[in-house]
Image (tube, rainbow, N blue to C red; front, side):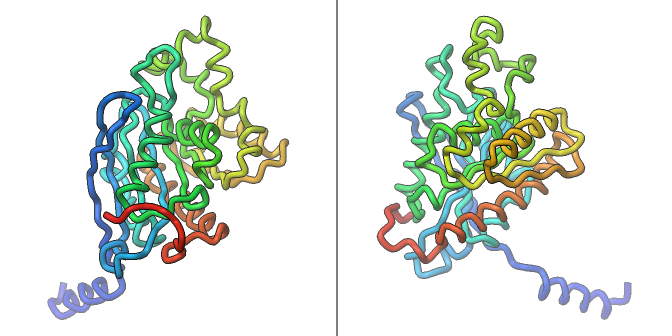
Length: 289
């Protein structure tokens, strides 16, 4: 390429490309429920450190899938730039490899619903400049994390104002062969009542009663798409407001890295609709960090 032309191409890219200046931190969050600490990734928007230091921000919690950990989202998706773009704090806690984000009735050592839904939220509000209110919190996740996000939001309607699921395992009864699932849910036959009660598809009415902004999506080539369609159809029948989308793709990071951008956009809209945004935290609690 002509050197002069190459110079102008580079200059154009520098001028037209946004400069993402978010910060990523790893913090250790203790769990009294499980008597140990777990790492979590926290992504702060550029404005958090470059501003006057008084602004508070909404928070989006992102849950990883089966076999994953707190590093998955930052390693496999452009999640960081969303913090800058929408002026939100992103929190990615560790949910264990096969916890399903529930307080297990068969394993008292596995209490990840309490950890993520209560202890992580309390820690983040204490150590970062958050808008510590339901209307300023959203939770979503992929696969097992999609189930976990909806499950936690259902059990804690006063904690989260918005929730989502990406390729969510919204009916764990179809995941009986998933390694490790029986260790937290129990035997599918003997403990069928518990499995049925935990299925998100059986709790569509409760999602309406929770009065949360709700978004669900799944790839058309995903093995979980039918259970997501069933949930969507039940929500429609019940008149529960929600966004639902199917896009080309399967149970892959290529799909999830794209889908999460739509979900954070949805949450940013929900925050605006609830009149929650950075610089609007007068009277809210939450510590500076």
